Length: 121
Image 1 (tube, rainbow, N blue to C red):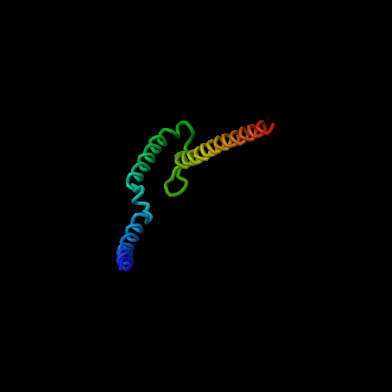
Image 2: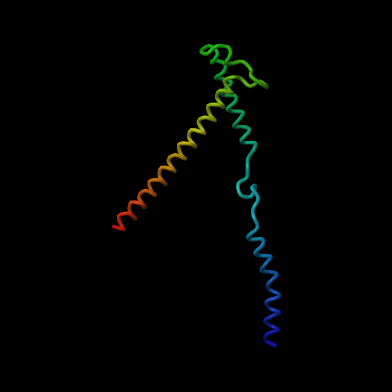
């Protein structure tokens, strides 16, 4: 009799527990984790483009008319060169950080190797 009551108790509480576990461990969507504000990104891009256009009005007097010329779809050479500069800058920073991390890992590995070597003597 006690076994039947215990069995009925575990059967009735098990489905509720599994539903609760599923909702707690279900993966979140990207919008729930970090909502992307695409309008704000677009506004910033437009402001940067306008700033480059303002610089582009005075740049031909220093570099010549070719810098204000259109390359493709009304993209000036100045905007293209600015974007290429940003790409190279990001790659440079990434490589520098990667090098620093690798150097730190190597120094830690050498330190443990030296410690193990002297510990065996």
